[in-house]
Image (cartoon, rainbow, N blue to C red):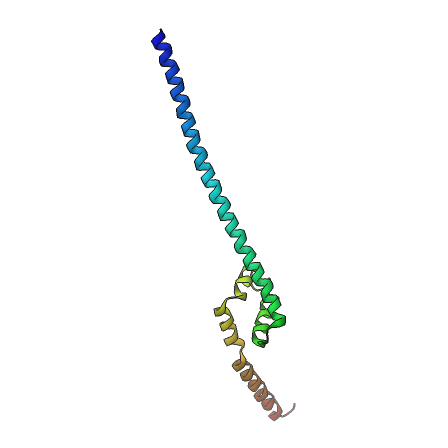
Length: 132
């Protein structure tokens, strides 16, 4: 009998220690996962704040820059931020050099002078045509 009781007590203590060790392991795993989730969430928030700060810097740059093409580009992005593309895309495009260079190529000084020349030629054509 005594042997059976001691065996039963040993078995319950072994089970209890096994449960404690597994609960310790799972709690460590939970803490690790929680810390990782918090770290990822903090990184996302930090990135979003940096993007928004860059947006406010760019909006201040509209007033302070002497580059009229840069001003025009920033105004164009601000005006079309919600109509043509999403807010996040607009925030990325503000400081994206390749996007600015593409916009400048399409709307830059050469194209302005070409459009001006084309307008002049069109008005000359219309002046030459007889009236109806």
